[in-house]
Image (tube, rainbow, N blue to C red; front, side, top):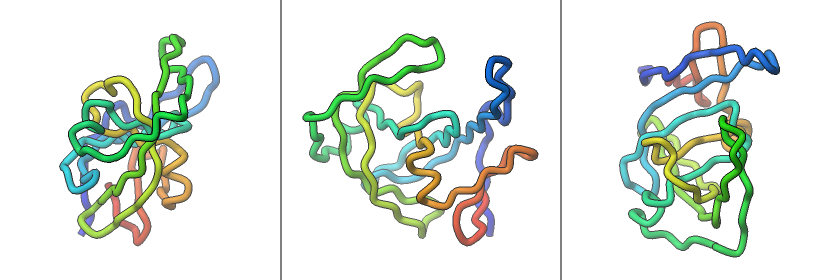
Length: 138
């Protein structure tokens, strides 16, 4: 049975570059803690909220930093990385590394293209839907 979620923003066309960006909002579990997730096709990397990272209590590797550029073109630093277990649609489990960043606007985790491509997430920009492997629609 398909899993449905609210769509934030849908598909929008950026006037500057004419690239479509899909933002899709859903819930899942990160290290067995319920979290709000944002699939963002405009993000190159996945960023976990620093407060949520402390809450789940996993080891954070602070030896790496990443300078990120957001919508406002004001760079900020993602300080550290950690390996997380992400559970989607009850039965799909992924283990991958995420960057730890400043508060992510109420999202526990912003999932960028570094997650979506290897995970086989397919975007349908026409209707604003997102499909996981095995045709699970979210």
